[in-house]
Image (cartoon, rainbow, N blue to C red; front, top):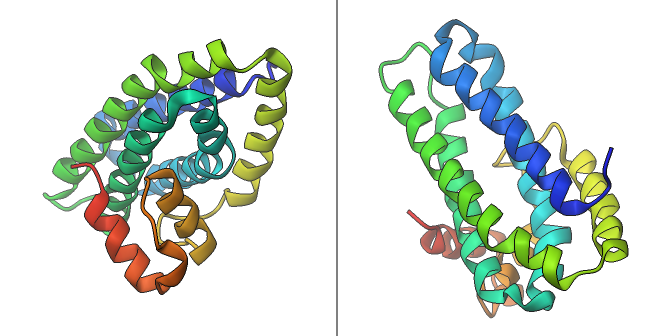
Length: 184
């Protein structure tokens, strides 16, 4: 298996797409699969935010990283809303569609801007190093849900999104600021 961070990220994207397809087309599996999907999405996002986005920003992709981080904030918001919606509720399909659409849009953009930029500007050894860091961070966050976020992780999200003054904010203030920055 490749340790190239770009390949690892794209593998997660394909896995999320499979989960989305099952969630959209097999309602009887929703109750069991929503926590699996939100766990993978959360672990993937936190690993990108902590390990990949800072490196991509340094490699010349700061604007793309800022935009991608804002899309992560929106995906977190939508994943939390979905996880709080009963899978048998008439509201569930709409909440699921919103999340799928937002994440699909993000994946498409990330795979056409951030990831190709990383392949172009970072050598193979650096991408392998980032791949190992990505996998370690992803493993550390497996089992977490969107609401399971620390102040330090919020600070990293703020840095990725280009928000200054985060360190002087309380966790609640920072969460509110980040929610206001989410891409809708």
